[in-house]
Length: 210
Image (cartoon, rainbow, N blue to C red):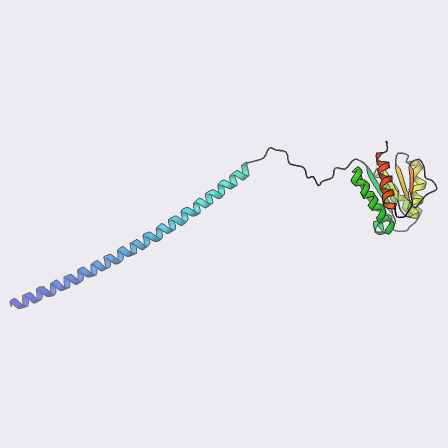
């Protein structure tokens, strides 16, 4: 009987020990899980904090750019050309400034514009190449208050010769020669010096007292 009691006691002691070990194991596992969770939470908190700091810095920079301003006057673009209130206009045939003579005259006008800062433009006579058809295009240039009018092409030159006496305050430059040069009508001949001659004629007309 005494042996049975000791055996039962030993059995209960063993069972109790295993139960304690099991509880300890579960507690240890729970502890490790809690530690992992806390580490993960700390990483998330750090990431959120870093993101918040970045966002705050971006907002600060945006606020500075938005509310800061420079009271200094803007620096003008040195490439922009300041033009004088003088217009030199070219009357051409239907080819515009693509024709050989007209292209050279246009280059001479641009040379003069660089030196005098006069505005230059051109108007082609479209349609029939006749004196009668050229007159409306010439009148359009005069109505635009062109100060210097150049003409290239026989119909265009003839139209200017007939109209020039009515506009004494306008200087006319006729390319190809004319029998009516004088006063406010100037003539330049075609040739190797055409570009330079046109530039000189335009500069003289721009610089001449009105």
